[in-house]
Length: 203
Image 1: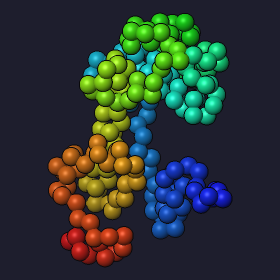
Image 2: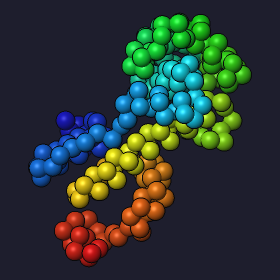
Image 3: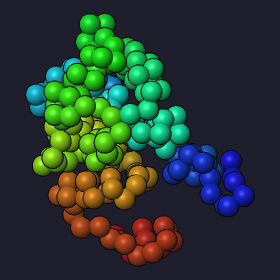
Image 4: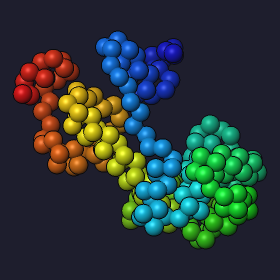
């Protein structure tokens, strides 16, 4: 739905769906299933506890942005964390004794990042950084790699099926995927926004 400032809620999803309906084209989601992520990161040495803990931790910047909490020291945080633990434990099919409550989750956070959860929390702690200064950065990096591998394999599977593929994602994803896509497809050919002209020019 368009807003008064001309922006559309839902990011790139809304124009992608509308474009697919106009063509018509088949629309595929690019996100991996949580259980697939769980299996992939387990192979990289990320425990189920660390995956669950991180899934909850990465909500904090969103909760702050939505003004559900002022910061990670807000007294409303424990209830949000407890609800997120329950939800994510179910989606990951984990036992109820894995980070069973806020206290266990807070102890997990302190053990990894070597500080108490509180107002000093910064968004950088959930960044997918292989060489980040927080232990949670490395968990985020493993999850990011698993998501990227899933999307890459999905793209290649559709191309191998001789399908015409349009991939819609943000610039940060392109930076991650570009080396792998170039290795498989070669250097891209870009001739402007006229897709029919581009298709002819890039043959």
